[in-house]
Image (cartoon, rainbow, N blue to C red):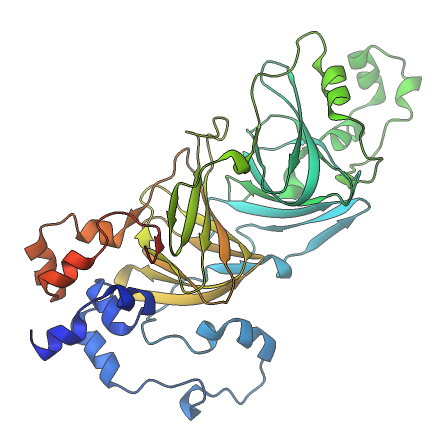
Length: 418
């Protein structure tokens, strides 16, 4: 093997290190430019060329080291694909709060919007429905959710940490925090333009309907309508609800309870893929039947691991980082690439078909959601592609030897190392 070939050969360790030679062998930059980058001195964090003596935000720079000093493999302009929930406006109410990340906060996020919401014990997200489908995961605590299916049948259920729910467009529902300390949950909507300020609220509807019309509709006196609320409540405080069975019984009415389950218990879901590097749980309409517009994966990457180089052919990817620290590089068309750092509470976004990978840069597990506006989950890995292409064709592209190609994983591993 020639010296150049040895320099450019890709090993499993090279994939984890993601140096210039590894990216060259992965086809993300040319071999010639990779060699040039290795020979050319690149500024270190403490060099004069990388210094920033003017005004700055040291705390922000510390959280985003790959923006302060991009790795040498970054090139060109790639649209910002990170926005922290911590910067989003928090709408405070008696009984809880909400904050959202939409296309207005993260311009690249055109297909999905997200809301982080907190309810106290007894706090109610009032009866409402949306013009977008709502997928949710409970981040903390417990809540009672209610809904009405398309046949007019009631749904009432309690959900705890890690549980999911989904309400299709137009399905009325509510959420109420339970004891001992209410809940916090993430709502994901299948429209990047969606805002929690733009829902159909029961109290808002009543406040904008004349009392004589309400009286006629409900077949009660106009006097009975005088106590009707005159503005929206959105989130408000109330007593903690009683036993679940009681609420289910009184809500059933003559039609009975809904046969459709709008909730999903992830604790009952088997791991889809598990390796030494971590695990992936995939939840789409094949498992969560009602969730027809949102597919998801819950990904855990152990320290030193990497969510392998891959892309999604069928939909943009919206991410929510739940714990740990990570680094994501997105490769765009025209030889452009950008690396950004992520912490718990951050939102990430990758446009459909763009290659990317995520490394755990911390000392604890990195856990995040991958969300897609689709009924099904789909991804393709770089290793899977290369090992299912005629070997000589791959070798001619990358300049590697047959042994290196043979050592690559033959399937979609998801999280490395195997």
